[in-house]
Amino acid sequence: MTTTLITGANQGLGFETARRLVAAGHTVYVGSRNAERGRRAAEQLGARAVQLDITDDSSVQAAVKTIEADGGLDVLVNNAGIQVELAANGDMIGPMDVTAEVMRQTFETNVFGTVRVLHAFLPLLRRSAAPVIVNVSSGLASLERMGTWPYHGVAYPASKAAVNMITVQFAKSLPEIRINAVEPGYTATALNDHQGTKTVQQGAEIIVRMAQLGPDGPTGTYVGEEGPYPW
Image (cartoon, rainbow, N blue to C red; front, top):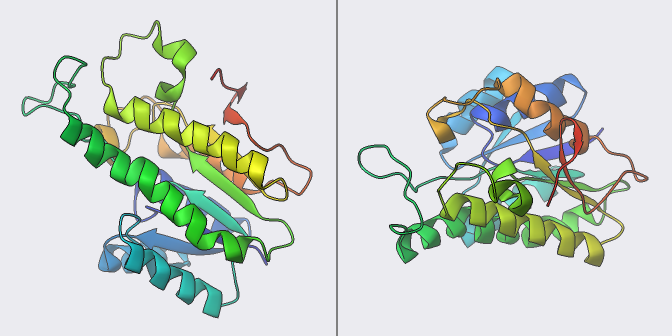
């Protein structure tokens, strides 16, 4: 039985990924900052709930102890993320208006939180026969694409570009673990006020696929539904 932890799984892409992996036979932990929302989501999915605030050391360590006591971990899906660079009128904050505080808030969750969770769960993953890490990135992390796209936000794309670098460097250092970044596409979730053009079912497809890699699968890649994505 494969045991999987998904951060930020009480809604959106994380919830749909959990649903699909439960159906595939995984024992899934729904990581949620809000314990009650996580509990309700887990009950609906037939999964297990674990309170997990990726910005808080004590919360992360408590989650590690819970999952370790239950038997260990095979797959980690780093899905939790935030986007805070919207002005009061709903417009995107561009380069001339973005502040260090907006950058800090975004990186605290999307980058520092991801690294915190990675390090905390590595001892459990290293005990697995086929460990996998999936880092949920974004097409906005692509430097090649962003050079021409009419998107002016800074903090969120920068944070996801950092997630891509984390993916590459951890993959080089941990060749025994399949570690990849995925681009789910512009998916309608709470992160973008449900304005995305893809459903969560479509967006979760690449996450689910990469979460089920075998020991001979790729590592250190950045992929979308159609294949490799340009860095």
